Image 1 (cartoon, protein in one colour):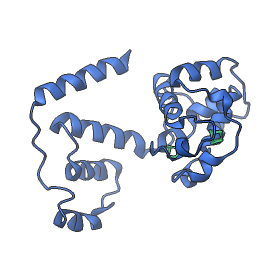
Image 2 (tube, rainbow, N blue to C red):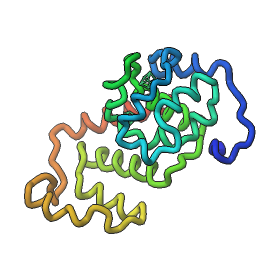
Image 3 (cartoon, rainbow, N blue to C red):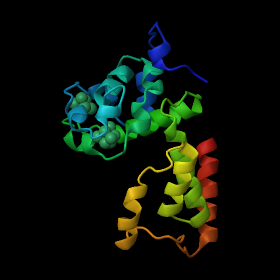
Length: 190
Ligand code: SF4
Ligand code: SF4
């Protein structure tokens, strides 16, 4: 497993990293002129170790370890606020997605412990029920992450307003859903 950027003392540049990430994301990362509008509007910026514009700068400079090991790529909520604000029309979500795929493929450590738990619990729920079963997902996530009471106070109100259900959803054509998931899993291993 690769070490995080914070534990590295020497920063070494990979000259081809910019090209690799542009090809992987389909975005012209080189045209970012570091105005910072994306970061100013990012709702998750307060929790990130690098702001979105800084991640793009790392890529421009070929600092692959810094870009692939930061918490930012795992905390990005894919809300698209940055894309809406960017004067260069860069879709940062696609860049974040490409960085996550690369970080996984190269076995980089995920610096936020809860993220892999969240992703695997979410996907397992969809795999089992054909769509998200919110109550089951939150229960399983809270147990596995150790945050046992997280968001539990909201459950009664959401149940009363029929925002979530106690029982799992019934999905027609589960066979087709399973086939789709299997296909997606095969593609992700390529
Ligand atoms: S808003 Fe666009 S141009 Fe400005 S720093 Fe962010 S990505 Fe770069
Ligand atoms: S898509 Fe990600 S980086 Fe962009 S504003 Fe939303 S959370 Fe921040």
